[in-house]
Length: 380
Ligand SMILES: NC(=O)c1ccc[n+]([C@@H]2O[C@H](COP(=O)([O-])OP(=O)(O)OC[C@H]3O[C@@H](n4cnc5c(N)ncnc54)[C@H](OP(=O)(O)O)[C@@H]3O)[C@@H](O)[C@H]2O)c1
Image (cartoon, rainbow, N blue to C red; front, top):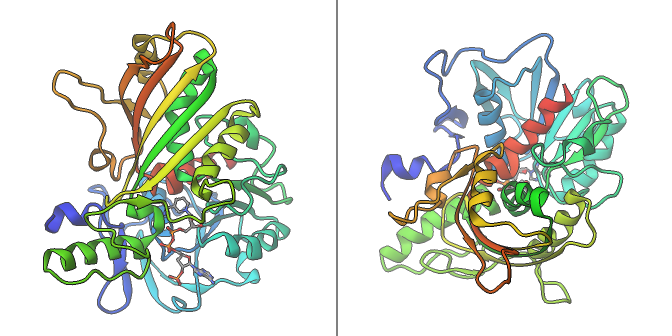
């Protein structure tokens, strides 16, 4: 892939030669680079933890795209990035090393720097009256912490508001769970899912900015006949696929698969729903795909299912059998909506009680940054 096409799959910001961040996209014709968009005195003060990462960079893009209001932003990352400059919406920021005091006076903190950082700094932020929206898995299964997809279970976070002085913690679900449930939930509401079988085809972007760079590098190396550099993954990624790199548990499932199982039950508030998953890493730059087989308590035919999906917020149906056109990761990259297609009756199940669907979603966006900003919007 060349030039523009590949850069569209990369991240919105990147270091310029002088060590300064600059925008690659999200420039608006009405204002664009260099113009203040959502800087507002009545907006909350924000902190972005992990601002140099894949999700952190996407936070900035989504804040800009949605005109999310803010009074100020603290750009936080590790010691390695401290002191680097970043220009965002016409204002220059210096990236600061994350410390507990970073949250003094901060209303909303968006965390995406890994579970250990969330565990170490999340409670300190909450203690300072800050509402934390956390992208890591650190608090997802904590019964006190709402696990929220705004289109699915916004009621779970209704008790948390900015400015209450109490602070709070809200977890963003795993990216595969978000993408799956965006499509499965409207059908679940209609016919109640009894069992769900998920097979994922997960992109490099799910493993962070360094994994995206490694896939690009490996692709060049393999085409040039050189041995691929394997720093992020233990095996060749370009022109290959492999079982998801999350650690395998004693039951044989890896952690990514078990997240789909446990998080679905928590989000649907249904301990009975049966979920099984197989998660695979594929050499796609960004956006996950998932094959989802659903078994329902009540009958649901495919035409009704398609109509329900067409009316579902944040979902777009791409299901053109005549021209064999269905969702692809490329089509949903950098898009907000989750695309659903291949909607068909599961012929192995009796009486309209089963459906197969194929779902694609940009997991840095709806699977991470967009979902978190949508949560933050509901806090205001
Ligand atoms: N990628 C996705 O699609 C996705 C989806 C959902 C959830 N998540 C979750 O979001 C988190 C970040 O993922 P990512 O893909 O954005 O990873 P990434 O591209 O590797 O970025 C990691 C970020 O964490 C920062 N960081 C690392 N160590 C730190 C420290 N000691 N103190 C402060 N900041 C530190 C890094 O800053 P430096 O640049 O300074 O090292 C960088 O900004 C993870 O918990 C991941 O599971 C990711």
